[in-house]
Length: 296
Ligand code: GLU
Image 1 (cartoon, rainbow, N blue to C red):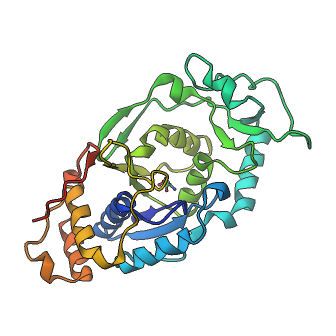
Image 2 (cartoon, rainbow, N blue to C red):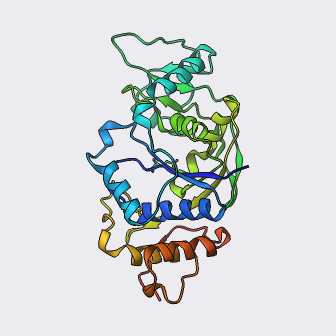
Image 3 (cartoon, rainbow, N blue to C red):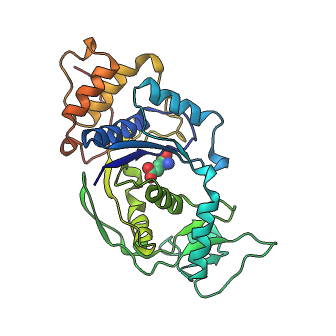
């Protein structure tokens, strides 16, 4: 089977060092498997979108020589396909409407949704917009990550009826990520470890829909000085286009890869070619960490 990987940024800000690590790791894993590397813009959340961010991300990827295969998929163009799946889940009573407030769920002992609306048979009215939850009848309690090994999932978390369509009429990430990874034929998902906690939910959705489950590799997160994940929300410094080779070398080091001795003499394309040839996923650290700044 042909390997198809992807990078799926949300356009909520420009690429920063943490997203560079994810882009590079997914690219090298795909290319070292002689596979395709696709890019998908996850623009399903207009309130969190930053104008111009999608273009800025793509420009940075090109400047890094991280060229994607095929057409870019923009999630904002796929509503019709998502809606059909949502409707079919509702028709088969595999999903239900829910009017619970975030506050009510927050006050529950587990802080997780308790299935309160499962048998209330609520219907959408013009007055009130409701969320839609998946009836979690096939929870996933364990899965294997290629980098981090066997992952055990907290029981209550695995069993939670999670949201697949939001009250503000937006499709939920956990639904569309599965639909699109399947639509694009993705065979392996390489992404940041911040998404480990939702992976079991996504696997359960593949199984419910009868879709082939991809393999998973969760890359370490880059932490800031307060040990928070570098993120667009935390205003991580955007990647500077004049420093790309050094940043690429730092990202390779962060991913536990060997660096060519003469990297200063290589251009970005030669550096990437070298990195593809020497990529070894078994060297990728299992722990998140801060960035050490010394490069040899
Ligand atoms: N769009 C998500 C992000 O930018 C990544 C989703 C995924 O890789 O599954 O954090």
